[in-house]
Amino acid sequence: MTYVVLDICINCKYTDCVEVCPVDCFYEGENMLVIHPDECIDCGVCEPECPIEAIVPDSDPRADAFLEMNREYSEKWPVITYQKPPMPNAEENKDKLNKYPADFSEKPGEGD
Image (cartoon, rainbow, N blue to C red; front, top):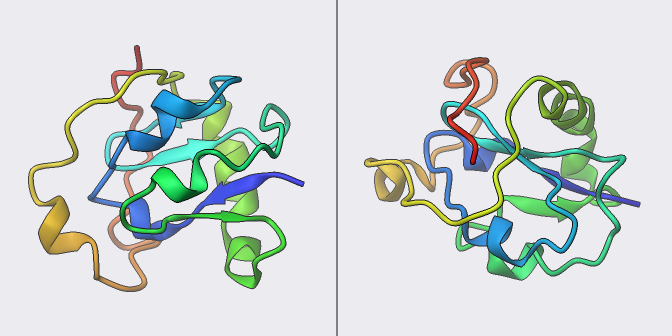
């Protein structure tokens, strides 16, 4: 099992989760984070750290649509291991629904 970042993260990018990850399996895009499913050890410490509940176990039905997206972009984007400020309009975007693919950016973030 693994954990998956949902499209809720898009245009928010809270990074509280990366600070607690013991295996550094988070990767940073321009406007969201993803988890590398082969690196995640299923410890679950990241899930309660996300203030907008954008991280779920792959057993959650919502994860199905984003598992392969997390895999694909975790292999393209840089690793992130420390907390950064959220995106400037995170509070405005946290409750927006169906952000993928319309609001998604394929561009990498800065990483560490």
